Figure 1 (cartoon, rainbow, N blue to C red):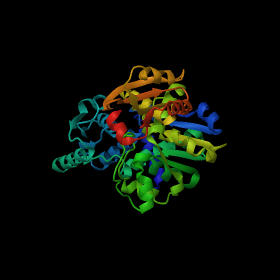
Figure 2 (figure 1 turned 60 degrees about the vertical axis):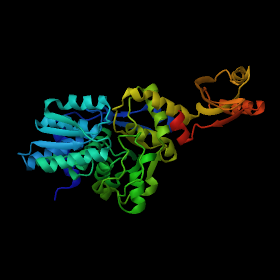
Figure 3 (figure 1 turned 90 degrees about the vertical axis):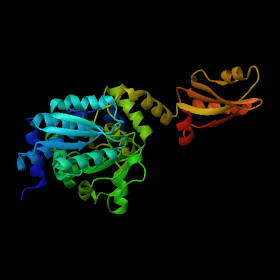
Figure 4 (figure 1 turned 180 degrees about the vertical axis):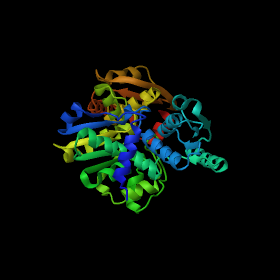
Length: 412
């Protein structure tokens, strides 16, 4: 019987007719910072800037081998899976219909159409992904088309395992630890199934979409009640049934969660220091290094940077979230006396490194006072302790709302 490793190697060999292996690069900056030999598996440098074309290629290849008359493929995706499927539809010379939510950014729609060309049609359906998915499956049932799942498919898992095949060939050995981002589970299931017990693993999920951790706790895949969509490439409400079957015996201690705001810090660091553009999901494996620093010291570690499809229109949001997480930007509501000189008195309290990034009168809350929304940026987080101490001594009334999710959503 052919083993999973054999089929993964065969899939990898077949891929070489379509695209080259993505680079495995030693990162000196991270290696020095963490006292380890850290390598990045640069899936952000694939033809579609993510690993998703691997699974799409293998699943489509298998379908066409078994049903050569099958000429119509369908997927539902707002991002990397859509682009991978589009790329492969053009490669195999088959037709594809790609369902995307109406709310999908134009940049992603344009890239999908660019990769697929005349081979694909993009249909914008539904405000939410569940509606889009339902439309795609209904279309498949009506047209007899083949639905290409993003992760819950054995051929997709096998295709994603090509990442592990390449790591082994490029490193000429197994690493001590592989750090893998987890969304639906296809990549992590494929890599772990190929390496088996040959190395240690760290699986990392966004804090607002920890579906693997929830499944391990429940003993089966369960749907999360709420998902933070910021890490859109890995924010999945329920890990796939088939990936989980390959991950069900994972030690929960090897599953970590990364806070969304901290991921923003990592994205900016990789961009500013290394010139590497990563999307939020693509930064997960690098971001979690701080949590496993004691485990990796002196070890050879591979981080899979799973994608680099980042829309730079999101950069202001990423910078904002990174500053707030780092403690160098805060928002607060100040109760400002309505008298001459009060504003000047407040301005004189600010330190030489404190800059006003936002100043907005909200309302006159009393005859002699008004509420003001103020955003302050500074160079060092410790400057806020000094600022708030001065405000307290002068007698200003204020409320820090930086971490107040509800007020921040409405006011900031």
